[in-house]
Amino acid sequence: MKQAYLTTIILLERMHRQFMEVVKVELDQMGIHDINNVQALILYNIGTEEMTVGELTLRGYYLGSNVSYNVKKMTENGFLKHERSPHDRRSVRVSLTERGLELRDKLEEMFERHLVAIAETVDSKALSEANGNLRTLERFWLAQLGFGPRTGELPAFSAAS
Image (cartoon, rainbow, N blue to C red):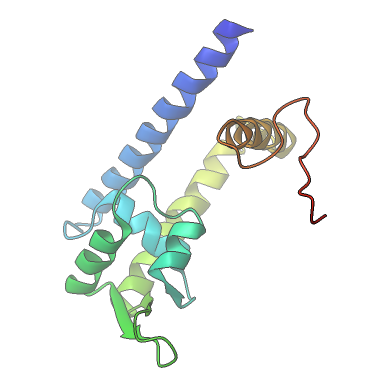
């Protein structure tokens, strides 16, 4: 079990790096050099929505780097626009510009190509099972951080419950 667990950790990290390299290669092939792979995925995940930098972080689009910095760079390079919230002047809402939407569409085409290619070697049931196992591992790690019941423990209740 220990070797399988450690191998899973190594594979997750390696697959993440490889996927990020795939995105980088796609950007290079498109001749887009003023946005990096992390920023491109943040942009993709924003999609047609408008959200705050805090929402980006909470939704998991942080991807290990400074969201505020990435938003600033994407705004400077014309991929994002931002506006202060009229209700809370501290809050900045971001959305994609026309250029950002064009790049998002190109990334969507990349994902569609990947779906066609991966369907030749991995069926959807196996992929769903892998996702289920990864979610279980994610919940385990969150529990280790104190964000849920530890494995085998019942949730704690406060006196107010």
